[in-house]
Amino acid sequence: MKFKKDFLRYELDLPHSAKENKIVDNTRWSIVHEIVFEHEGKFYQTCYSRGATERQEEAPWEYEDEVECVEVEQVEKVVKVWEPVQ
Image (cartoon, rainbow, N blue to C red):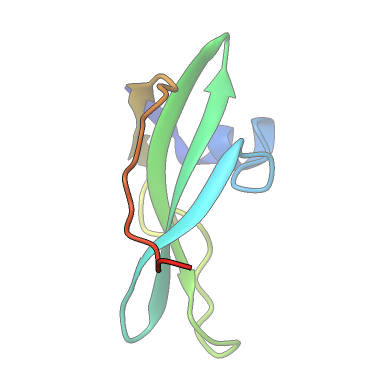
């Protein structure tokens, strides 16, 4: 689903009001975030980037008019990890 950038920023107050916000990548000039947000009882996931330094003035979705978002649902997963023997 596509949302207008201004709707996400000003009506939904994203990325500040996101249910989840995590850093998933970085480039020389930007830090890429992945967020999950709720709208009309459904949850959506999308990415945005911000400038990596105070000199990199980049707002979320600055170069997009419409933002592609994927509907998501929360699922429980079991993860196995290796830990030192005590």
